[in-house]
Amino acid sequence: MPRPIEALVHTDALAHNLARARAQAPNARVWAVVKANAYGHGIERAFDGLRAADGFALLDLAEAERLRALDWRGPILLLEGVFEPRDLELCSRLKLWHAVHCEQQIDWLAMHKTHEPHRVFLKLNSGMNRLGFTPAAFRAAYARLEALPQVDEIGLMTHFSDADSLRRGADGIAHQLAAFQAATEGLAGERTIANSAATLRHAPRTTEDWVRAGIMVYGGVPDFPEHDAAHWDLRPAMTLRSRLIGVQQLQPGDTVGYGSAFTAEQPTRIGVVACGYADGYPRHAPTGTPVLVDGQRTRTLGRVSMDMLAVDLTALPASGWGSEVTLWGEGPRGSRLPIDEVAQAAGTIGYELMCAVAPRVPVRCA
Ligand SMILES: *Cc1c(COP(=O)(O)O)cnc(C)c1O
Image (cartoon, rainbow, N blue to C red):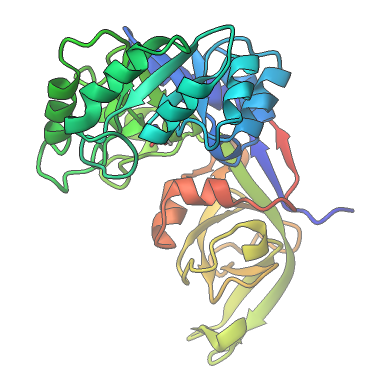
């Protein structure tokens, strides 16, 4: 028998969450963002649930090839554009749209030989200070692109740093929105500025022509804990589950795992789960991280080790060897453990947990 851990990808939840993005932005088209192997869900599996998207956005050219191999003929956008000149050949061949965020990428386009001109999205650095032309350089870059026979339509894009929070006040996107409007005023082209957080929290100001929905289509919440998945009506697209492969009875003073990080203060029954950090479960999840056993909520105990972790069974007398354990996602009998809660306990975000599920974990569609 294989080790009992597995990840399930819920294609119906992907379709539901995609519909949620559409409902938030009824006048926009929706790019399902499938970078990082569809946030760990697998491009091919995610495609099953997301085929109603208007396009797919990603950044790895090999992933774009995998999408075309699935016979997806619609738009594919490379969010970071090309990394070297010969990538443009693949863009021509596979009809990929690509972001243009720096002068080098325009230089490469100017030297590129292609029969069909490319569709590009010129990226503005409106304050995130990651990729993009400054507002001062933006119009000159637009003019350069416009003059190139290699370029067809030019779209306009930017990315928010604080669409998910109140860190910059009640309206953390206003300064970037104003920068984008000023830099692009009067320029022709489709606009795309919203990620999931902006789509959920700032529609319709941000939704324009295209939205780029990432975490929300996977059922992760960009602004947890201010809001949760129930608030936004998002369903988990991934379940990580395993089983108990051991049970121990602790007496007061007994400890659990490496570093004796948990000490029992009373008689405590614990279960040992076939899941550890080598499966992608966060090693920094402390004692008390939520977990479901047979669909009932309990907590982890002690340090997460490479292949195992321990859970508290004291309040679950009917559970024991072989019991089903839900690390996150959908549990038995309608139970559910949001990935955001596990991530928060471990000091990270749902995005990282999804992306970190290890290759040794078998994944299947459910
Ligand atoms: C990853 C990414 C997104 C999607 O972000 P979410 O927060 O997952 O919705 C959108 N736009 C760009 C440029 C990205 O890199």
